[in-house]
Length: 389
Image (cartoon, rainbow, N blue to C red; front, side):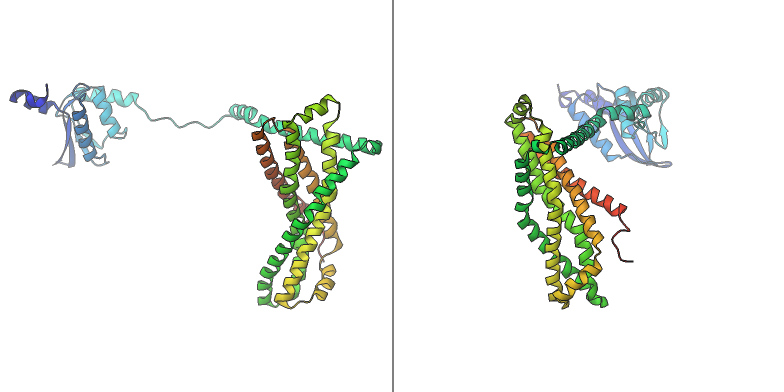
């Protein structure tokens, strides 16, 4: 039976017992006065609960607001919890209430606490996390180091018995990694040289230093941009191809067949690719640098009226021969690392196409990252080499 159908006296009594909060102006400022029965039974109906929620929303908690709970007739732990949460789990600046209500609120405040802040990890917990998360890093380092060690042993076998080497595989890889990469590397190098020359000429013209464009283009292209640009292109082109080739052999179970026949994976798959890329990379690097210098020379002639004859005569004086040897040396290192990373991810491919695509992507990303890191290491180690006094 609803409240509207009760007799008048019962309806007035139900309205008196309904929990509510009102704002009143009194002594000491703005007061929030709670009245009625703040119990689970009185708040069980949905309409009563929604009305009480609207009352509380109209009285937001403030630091200077005073609360008067003396008109409250009954207060259980549910009502006390509702008030404590509305006060943001902090006592109001001023609070008037009866002793029995205070006892209930004290108990709710004592056993209600915010979520404690997580303490910092101890040294033992850090070691535990490393045992779980760092194990994969250690395994990757172990497997890659084993691959490098096996490559060293295979090179020793090659030197002792050259007739056993897979020369046909080596020549095929040398052609695919080197000769077929010449057009794209030359095009990219040419465009990079033109762009760099145009940008540099705009600055040099302001200070009358047009002749220094030979020094800038020579050192930047031969020493840094040429090798790095060629390595990035080869990492995306040949590094991914190495991973895909070996990964497909894993999917088609050719690697298992080679193991059954006693054919070493390192000697027949890894070593020819590493040696081919180690030889091809310095040549590709010089080819890319030459294309970039040609583009820069043409752009310098068009923008700064620097003739190709002057450019070619000033280039040997601006760029010592040491820079060429340094560029070829680190290009060889780039080639070895790109081939090793491609072979490593190819060997780790699982016999499904999803793993093949993931391994190829990881191979390209890892190769480019390692190329940039090694180039930075070379720049730091040889920072005083190859410059005119």
